[in-house]
Length: 275
Image (cartoon, rainbow, N blue to C red; front, top):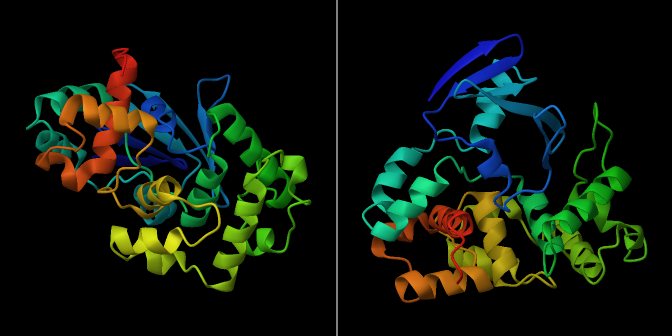
């Protein structure tokens, strides 16, 4: 990829390997929304960002060269060679089609605590409601930014009660959020250490949090810790794996299972496959 910096903007030439709509609407993140001006607005930690597509490029602003290189480049996974990954996946005909349809999806390297908390909220929930709960959480307990609010840190949430979270309308998930925050805040759950562990070790540790099962743990590992070999299994992906691959990805996809499942989901949705 090539980057051009000018007036607190960066233009990214990506050869079709960075599609904003596909990336932000594939269910991996909940704080990026399209504005009425066809500009995406998002918040990560305490940083606000805007993005749009122009002449085959992605434009990001406001951002300095230093901030882009030290933070956003990693967040958008821009140093990973998705073209090489797509070529590897294309050794299988089904995944070749899926990669063609899903080309441009990038796995975001989100803040581990925000990913953990967000996917706890996502349990038995739909996207609009998940976004609503997270929005209320940030507006109530986050810090005011230019136009939005930061995601509240675990230390802040750990001091709250289930009753304090009642206005968020998160239901049974409130007690899970509190337990996760207390364990992260106390150091019992060290997210940085967990991110460096193998998938099995990390999953085992994350599932000691009340209400965190395999799927939430795996979503945290994939979307918050960069474990692209992890494939969160829900009812849909279980059916897809059974339908296409006799219940497991082919060998060419094992190392990139998290990316492969995002492509597969997009492929099935766009072609209206009835699994």
